[in-house]
Length: 149
Figure 1: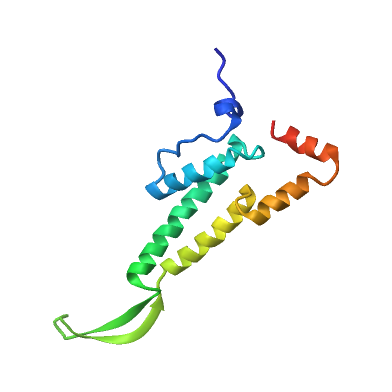
Figure 2: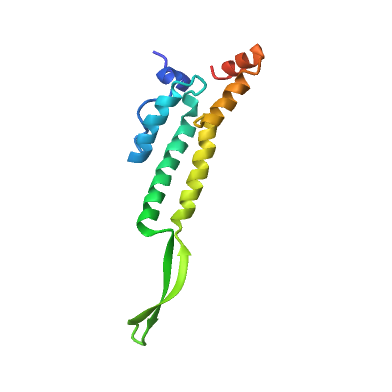
């Protein structure tokens, strides 16, 4: 029996189960997103890479947010004062620095928005996608459908 081409596996749709290497949060996001996306005929199996990126960015966003909740947006900076034997005598407060997780949090939100827009996961992007396909020209919709076969 000839092997199915990748585009025909699972009827060309996204698989329901997340990849094995996903963390718990990314796996939960996969299940939710794939259920929604499989109802959208424009999303096909070849888009699974985008869905993977979306779900892993979601997990990074959640992990960064949890870290920020536990450790704050800023962290104190101290400089140790030591004696000749290397023992710490006191710690002088020098100010605050931004928690590096705030940058990861911010970057993951931007990535989620960009990837989500590509997948049609926001109301605005779904409307734009539909309006672009429904521009009154019968042949434009047929061309797009042909591209995804």
